[in-house]
Length: 403
Image (tube, rainbow, N blue to C red):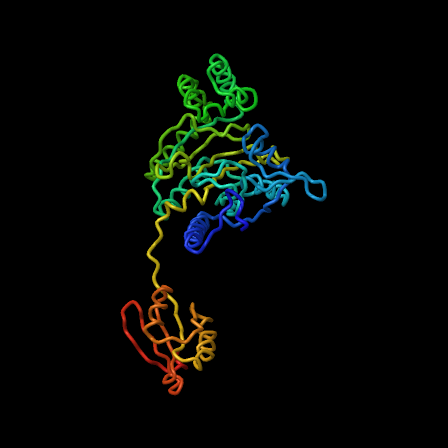
């Protein structure tokens, strides 16, 4: 037997209902905020992610599905969604057009990492990217959108905030952090030793417990913000307070690449184990420029759908549709003809085997439909159809022409 690849799961009917409910909910809410759908390819040039995600990141260094195609192009399956949207934004010359451009997307992403609950090698994300708005009010709108989505889905969360400063206050802070880490370098893990030279801000996000103990006394970014960044962060907190969105400050919440700036946020859940992040985002005002576009302020977020699947509280679905069956063999063709017409307006499930009424009712109940419609020899003669409402248990016989 051939099985699916490790970390790549099938989505069957019950999971698909949750999956589509999430997509429909998130899409509807993104539309209310003025965002429009964008679809980018699954396959991109590897250099796109090396330049955007960063060569020092685990995603690029360890996790990408990368290969040389038949045209000798170095390509990979997309590990995240933002880079492709930014690439499309530049390629379509929207950076030169000016104005405000707001997009949302959803689709499969691929990372070769150890599969675990809520973390797969092929997984799905819903994401939002906004270009052309420098105001911190747009950052707040991103957070409000995630909050709206999670609350609609019935998912509890804790919101964590931090500020990463800007190109003015980031360099002096980074120098102070590097100096601090090098003073305790003998006690830190190999990943942190590597990051000190390649991506020093990321040491604050280290999952090694002994490293975190050493970093308790590390300089905090919030204490080194310039006047503009501090003002924006205070404004963001005020907006959230005014709109009754609770948050907590996490000074270790980082992104770590040069084009990320100011707002960083993460939504976490206590219901999914150690991988508690369910959505995250922030401002990346320099990424468009990093990818050869014109300087454009930008902010966005992404949500891992598989991490949310078990947490989604599905609304009680109302029964709908028809089960149709024949009580005699000679009635089957008539049932198929009637069902074909009925399917133009309703869901119809057919049983092609003739059965007695009791077995048809059992099958209809198992199918989860609202109505059971049956035709036997008497109904054929009278050109009628017998219908039972499985919810209120009422029965009726009507002319076929009225069905």
